[in-house]
Length: 157
Image (cartoon, rainbow, N blue to C red; front, side, top):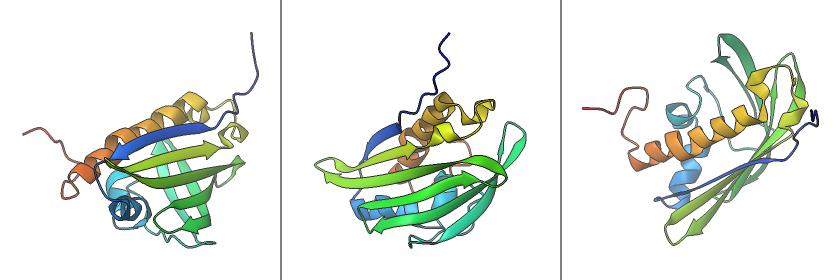
């Protein structure tokens, strides 16, 4: 049985039918982020050194997320350190935007996920892939397709 830790970066891409400025605002604006990402985000600034903390309930356990912005190129790239209070491990999440003929390509790269506790399925690479795929290809896409919608309620008539 192979016990090697899979340290390959998690990379998820999605093209949105929206201009770069609109996608940038969705991923950096503290008013928009809770509507498609984590509802408990209260503060966020696309500014190097900015730190935010918020709690997320994952499978009945509370995890205090701690993000520190490390790089900002407006409308092109934002990077932050992603860790959890009182949990060993440290990772980096990088969001890169580029205009395409269809709108905007977002490429998310999450590195260092393997530094979190291996005995907790919440931190498994597969969980990260599923989570980022959901956020970028599901939740954010739906938000950008209809920013007036409230994603927390059903979309059925």
